[in-house]
Length: 264
Image (cartoon, rainbow, N blue to C red; front, side, top):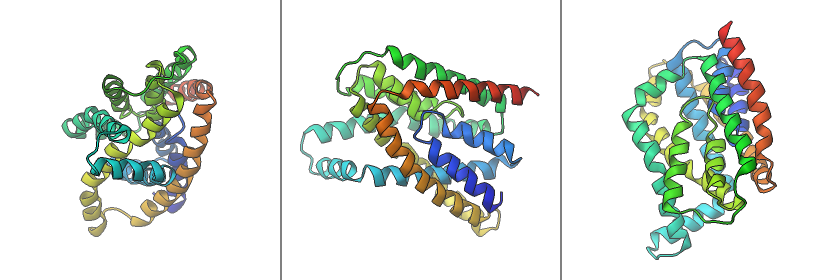
């Protein structure tokens, strides 16, 4: 991977991480377009740019995160403490799948374009169905947090949008739109931090051994970080205005194109 490919893929990751169109699916499509054939190096790049978008969430939600941390470590039962515990509960399904099926998850990222297209069609259906979600003002509860966490687990499949799956699931539970997107964006911090922590030593060993060129990783990370901030703020506005279902059209078209291209 050269620096220009890393720049484009980092931009793609940052823009699509928070929009309900599957960043992992677009990275797979981008990798196939550039002919990147080493699945291990590409998986490493994937982890790094996801870590960069982790930082973009921290920037956009820094006040929320600071408030949650202060209240959590004060050990006082209040709304922030409850919200933090629900975020932790939502991470349990993803943590279990990530720890038990790490190798299987890595094997998914091998340029299976038709598979990505099929998953994009599923994302399109999920987004379209939000048109029929109840317009309630409920809060996140333990049951809904766990189910939203399960929805996030499905997003390990490239083509299933993490934000699309989690926000759609929250809306199906009748959760207020502002709280749905806040919960969706904050819940991603735990699994992304965990995944990057576990991969950090491996990436460092590869870089020191000369197996991984650090420059594309740095360029991709910086680009994903900057683009992620812009996309995160845009997505906040989109969900609050109730426009998320329109992305189903894009996912439908992209999915059909990917299936056709992967079948040729």
